[in-house]
Amino acid sequence: MPDNIPIIVCENLRKSYGSLEVLKGVTGTLHKGDVVSVIGPSGCGKSTFLRCLNRLETINGGRLEVLGVDMASPRINQKVLRQLRSKVSMVFQHFNLFPHLTVLENLMLAPQKVLKSSSSECKQQALLYLDKVGLGDKAHYYPDQLSGGQKQRVAIARSLCMKPEVILFDEPTSALDPELVGEVLTVMRTLAQEGMTMVVVTHEMQFAREVSNLVLFFNRGVIEEQGDPKKVFTNPQSERLKAFLSRLNPN
Image 1 (spheres, rainbow, N blue to C red):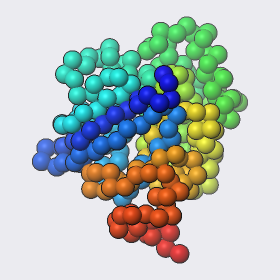
Image 2 (image 1 turned 30 degrees about the vertical axis):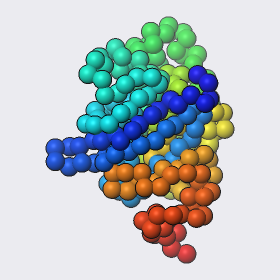
Image 3 (image 1 turned 120 degrees about the vertical axis):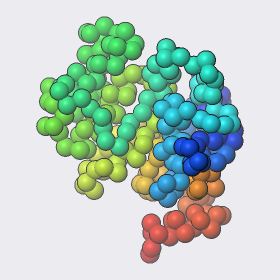
Image 4 (image 1 turned 45 degrees about the horizontal axis):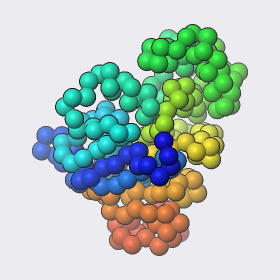
């Protein structure tokens, strides 16, 4: 897909849970190779937006198109969803590794089930991506033998095994002890440098500033400000964004 072709398009995107409207009209366009950091206060709709992008949540209004798939279409079936989610992978806060499977088995499972790849091909790919995230020596460990940072790197390697076009990260470092955050961000920086399209809900402002090419500031269910991170962080226009950044950097 050419770099100038939008891969995610949303127009007036809305999502409600009963009477609670969480997304109140989100509009934006993301392109191949974008590294997008989604920032904002808790409860502003960041994670809900992310979950809509691979239809873990269904939208209630507006338009959302991901890799050419109309996410509002009632005709989307499980086969289409499986295909879409193989291309739009997601890394969660809490790893979601199967505790009874080894690291290698965790990585091989989805490509075998969804992509119908052979066992030997899956194993080769899994070992390749474990090396990529610096865990080539942990293939036969079980998740409970790993640190939190190692589990999250395994989760990233698992996503890469699906050869996705986009990876969604939902606060991937928020469940980690501070000393483990760096090892995960290092892997994510490498992926960004290699051209992986990424949408990252994060509280890591340094990552957002240095690695992203686009920052979206969510507030009360809408994108209140967006743009180049250098401009967004050094010269915020929204009073709410100014207050948000000042709370994070009181000095």
